[in-house]
Length: 301
Length: 301
Image 1 (cartoon, rainbow over the protein chains, first blue to last red):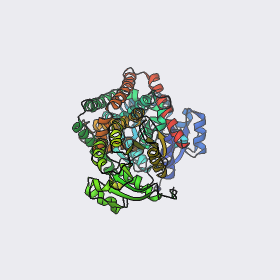
Image 2 (cartoon, chains in turn red, yellow; image 1 turned 90 degrees about the vertical axis):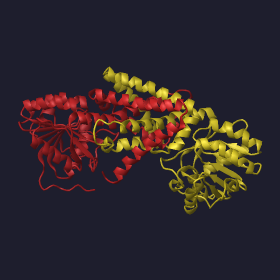
Image 3 (spheres, rainbow over the protein chains, first blue to last red; image 1 turned 180 degrees about the vertical axis):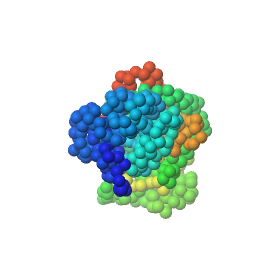
Image 4 (cartoon, each protein chain N blue to C red; image 1 turned 60 degrees about the horizontal axis):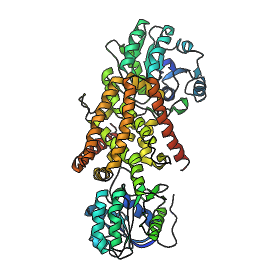
């Protein structure tokens, strides 16, 4: 679907810090929609940054973080979660007062708690953001303009967050094709622990458990069919990104692992007792919940 | 890809007992390849059986199990695992001596142990089979001719199995597009527990655990994106089929759940201790294994 072109850019100059799948797909969509005047990119990885310029993900590469953000009216931090606060602290002294800073991190409480007061001290506005979208790929080469089309983006403003800054970041994600919802940081982190962080932890543990099964000389993963491949696709996700998420959302992730362990223990007990009726009920309940997700996706909810 | 048409049918009359996704996709492929003279179908569910006739999955419907198999030279049992032995016992007295009987069950040791000696007593030949393919859908309506194209089918003959019967069943699956491999029943059951049965148990437990998370008034599954949907697709699989697999392959499934629990406990411990290096190593190891599966799939292995 083509993105509608805006009458007037939402911002004159956008600085993208971290030109990977997430940030790069946003700037590609914004450029396509005519929502930004110019996009300046910065990345710790010079090869990836050069690639981003060649692919048109950014208009030009900055020589340093300071020059990238100095004349920007909007700064987007698209970095692994644990890099967000240190990089924000490093760039804030270089921002003009009133500049809006936002991020794309998958964990929000620790990030917002660290960055928002710091931004206010420099007269800038921070809006926590998290687009609910992605693929298992990474880097500027993986970016594509339609990644956010029809997806949700969660913003997590606090009572201290500037209303105009929230409006700007909302308009930005809408221009990229997303439906924007606002949510409390703690609620965000717990819901994401359930629907995203827990599945990733399980997929990683499953692939390692199966790979380590060494009863036979051949690699048993060679026997896997499409089901296993689909089920474990997210275990190919970036290890650094997921290390940071596991650490930064530790309490909620541990709570959800414990919740999962209770259900797996129930299922294991049913199998041990050979309780066919309980097993069928367990599987049927799961099928009903899963089929309902597909139904709501079909209805476009 | 079009299936090559054989010069001469592999069998004159094939009886399909259970006209669902698995059996129906086989007969559609065989008919398309010209590998069978006539396909007679039987199903406990009369509506599904009628549908199978209308969809051309079978040429005609039998009025009873006995009449379905009476004049067949090959009988395919495509039923939930726990139905295989009882149905085999019911139909064997109606088979002509020398008839070949095969199945498509996901568990092999219990099935082969139960059916092979019984078949020999009636002068018939049983060959255990398991196509490594499927979707989360079920019923004749879900069947399609290309399901087995390029997939593996595992046959589990024993020292007592007739060589000509194995050759016939091998040719059948090859005509449907599969690569046929032979394997010991116990090895089959343990490998499948690892690469298929365990992932299904985990997907069912995950969907139930997340669905039951009730900290917020809304259904949090509404926030799920493509990752969760792909990851949990197999939790929409048929509850009766999976009840039977969990029961019939109980020891191996429990062994693999225990293996998975050890890896999940290791990961949980890394998160509890906030051990970033261990987490990154755990995720990287998983990514390497998972990416290798995709590479071998790309190479067509």
